[in-house]
Image 1 (tube, rainbow over the protein chains, first blue to last red):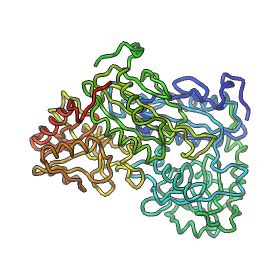
Image 2 (cartoon, each protein chain N blue to C red):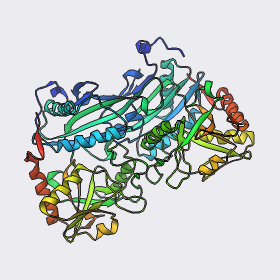
Image 3 (spheres, rainbow over the protein chains, first blue to last red):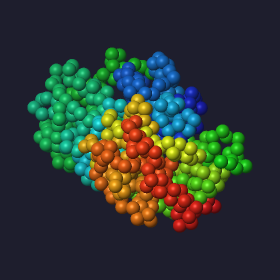
Image 4 (cartoon, each protein chain N blue to C red):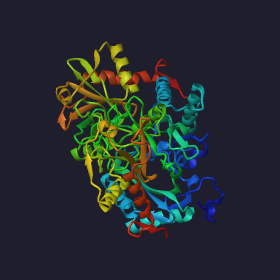
Length: 305
Length: 305
């Protein structure tokens, strides 16, 4: 990674943010303590990544973000083009060639002592920071040891709409500590009835007899999840959304998780028990290879301006 | 309210925060964008109020806060006495005679690119701002019009422990917009099975045939809720925690909500239908009067240093 010759140089943590109408080094980017994005987690966000100087599926992330903003009855003071330009500019100023780029909108601060969210002055923020890996490339062959949370169940869609990407991670945090005690790398959560949902920042897929399946409900409709559907179409692999349980995981031939933070990542152990021969399976490999190959395909990616 | 002759004078928004080891005007108090307290709502807090220069039940709020911090496996770099002194100092510097005083602890920022909450540098923050009323004193006789949310159900305890006071307000925010459409002042949420839980920042009580009841499950164990129990003991009023539904509300003689943000507040309309004669009931009045009378009782309150 290279750092530009901008004013960010003197800061140890690389990254650039756009906040309150200006760009600044990420280390100086701060949000008002009284913003309801913090005090009420009343916010939505999206994360797109830049790989070797190119955004991957930027339009899809912006589409979802704008939909989420609207669902929360927030507004951002930009047209789509301007928002896009801000994301490009954050990356350009950061000098990062591989980056994790987040756009977010908070409720903001209430006007006139109001306690109602309609009175918030919504705040748009964006930032580009170094890429965050769930599974670093050098450990891709080793794969992940996946746990299943027994202590926390995924916040149900009847409480918080999971299709609006949000910061309500209380259940995930409980599960992450549980996972540490189990000695696993990551943890997937179920709903209260035992149906598989998702984990902290990732969706899950399993493969049985050549067909893929992923949970139908209680999950973020991840862009990488959608990308898996698209790759499956291209590879003529059958894929369905279903109600899945722990038993389905135990009987799977292959398991993988997917996220903007690392793409398609093989699960080679389930609760420390080997999945098949404990190495990434052939379908997961084909999907992973195609996923990364798409990163310089102009139909799937756009160069940072 | 009076403003001190401190450096806060020049700021329009009164209030003082303690953050990152120093005191500053609330308008300048900001939290790092990358703090997981924001990006993962991985935080806990407590709010105590100051009334006419005296903290109300400060020790109980600090007890709960320290318990919550411990449950989340966070630590704060202070002894209890130091924490107490910081709260006093925020109020003293603010010059506020009536204040809303919040203490909070966030996961902080991860060390070394970690994605695990064990690696957060926990951050303690406190601030004192003007009091925020759910029901201002001048409208106390009028009471509140209470709605019941049909669109959002309270995040269940199996997902996020409600006894750890938290910022997961997504369900509340949905309900607040729903309440606005219903034309009510505030909204209470039920769980998915229709059992009453709590509303945004308040617990609920109903009174039937001289006895009080409040939801047993899915709620914050509010300090004001506990205060109601204590006042009931003093007034020899029976009170129980139960599974309550909408029907119980409809059949109640009196209803009130309680919160640090306003104390005991009569509900005089339920979904715009009058409760009894649409005026605060006699038991609610007795409790409200005693609640405020306790504010200069040295057994229940302590003067700001």
